[in-house]
Structure formats: structure tokens, C-alpha cells
Image (cartoon, rainbow, N blue to C red; front, top):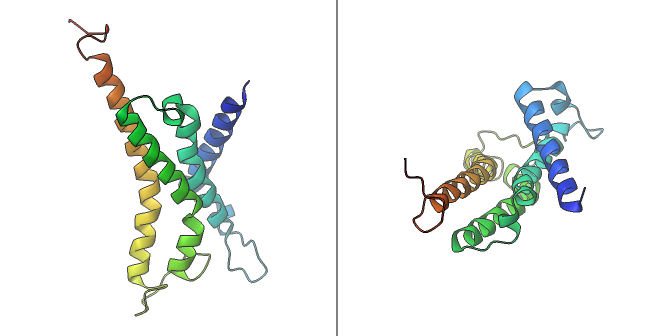
Length: 157
């Protein structure tokens, strides 16, 4: 098994494990990582998922690593932005919340307040939804490429 496949399967296993833990609401998510009980294990688990989900697509589709068409070049750039956003998710979220449990309150100030919470959720959902939109767009481009006249794959049903 080559290195790319190992990276792909590791990212896939991490992604599926994180999704399973988050959907099940496992008690491990609230287990504290520090003595002050301010950093939940769920933060680290979710961060792993935020990075591994776009990496699964990156390592799983050759066209995302070495794009040959204009559309896939653009999708590859967006995917790399999703990977970078996943890597920066904890630092940005910490700046927004002011804590590593990412809890927000009714403060009037931005950090830890309701406006910061909205930006936190936009970032969090944006990584997942952005990655899903990239893969859907790629799949649609494959279908349109297959059915394009002159491609040799024209369906004449």
C-alpha cells in the first residue's frame, strides 16, 4: 500500500470516528484534558475532524492534488482553504470565545458574546459544508464531463 492510500485511510477513519462520537454524544467529549477542567476532550476530537474531513477528500481524489482542468484547479484551491481553516479552527475559535471550551454568553463585548458565537458557528459549519459542496461540485463536473458531446461517453438512450 502506497503512502497516499495510508494517508487517505487514516483521514477517513479519523473522520468517521469523529462523526460517530459527535452524533452519539459520547461522554468522552466532555472529559476534561486539564486539571482546571476548562478544556474538554471534545475540542480536540472536533478539531481532528475539522482537519481530517477535507484531508480525506484531498488524499482520496487525485484531481484535488494534481488538478488538470480549470474547475478542478479552483476546487483544489477551495479544498486547501478548507484544510487551512480546519487547522486554524481552534486558534480562531479561541479568539472568538476567549476559552477552549468554546462557550459563549450574553456579554456585550465581542469576544465570548453572541456576535462572536455566530462567527464561531459560521466557521464550524463552513468547513464541513464547504467540503461537502466541493465534493458535490466535483461529482457533478464528472457527470457533465461524461455526457459532453465528443467525450466518447455520450449516452444515447
